[in-house]
Amino acid sequence: MADRKLTVLNPNGYQEILQASDRLVVGSNTLLAATELNAALTGTTASFTGNITINGTPSANTDATTVSFVNTAIAGVTLTASAPISINSLDIQIAVATESSVGSTRYATNAECIANSSVDAAVKPNQLPYILDDLTLVGTSPLTISESPANTYTIGVNASTTTTTGIIRLSTTSEAAAGTITTTAMTPKNVADAIAAIPDATDSVKGLVRLATGTEATTGTASNVAITPAQLTAKVDTVDVTTTLPLTVTQTGRVFALAANNATTTTSGVVRIATSSEITAGTATNVVITPADMETRLGGLAIVSADTTQEGLIEIATNAEVATGTDSDRAITPAGLRYALDQTDYLLDGGTY
Image 1 (cartoon, rainbow, N blue to C red):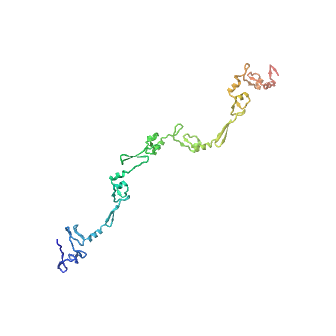
Image 2: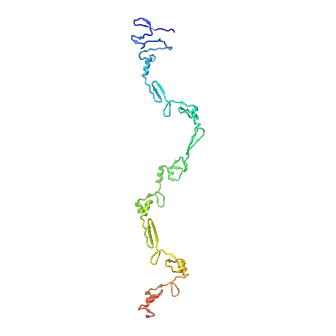
Image 3: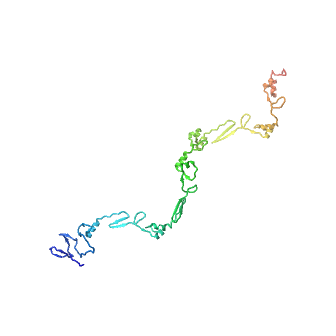
């Protein structure tokens, strides 16, 4: 293809070849370019159909325009983006992914998976075996861990006992009320229900009991409350022990010492049983003998009333009985006989003495 030169009309109306220093005017005064043409115009290798707009806005998508127009249009464009995409002027970038932000990353190599060394690469699902082959799970009681097959782990938990920590089932209402099962745990509701089911304590049934008030502890008449050690101490401090003879009492603080007086001929009291030697001697005045000892001392002698035919016990007659002279069951002492003889009206054998 041969080069062609552009011919135009000069200001005087004559046709001439367009020079490089000339300006091309479309119509009467419209410039084709804002500057002079300092170089030769060359055509494109591709076919072009449409209008060429030098100074203005193209009217269709098929029109051509200047670089200046394009730059002006681009300068008016505002681009926005959200993380991980950022825009600096017309430079669009994607941030690198981190542990705390979304972004772009690469896939790790198999060697990096095995070494567990890379911190800026992602692992594909088919690379997980490289990591899991070196994985070891260790459980601390009550956890149990078993592996079968490879890379498949079963994690369990031991049941709790009185000596081992573990998991435990909550008691049912009936189990809590029965109070016999040892493999379940009580909830607060179970405990409240179990306490509510406990009967009140009596003198024959174990159960709940209320503490006595101070007045109840002092009065000492309530039979359905319990006293505390402090209340018992306070009550004991008010105790007053009195005795009657032969018992005596001596108080030192909260200690009461009881004693019994010894028996005398004038005072009731305690007395000791005589020994065999004391019975034989017959001189002790502060001991007593038992019926058995008396029987032994008398040598089998029967204790009967004395009469004119047998020995036995006899009562001493009073002076009046002696003076009367009619009693045949009593004995007269010398003093009683003297008393009777001294009486002016005493008769003996029908005479007066």
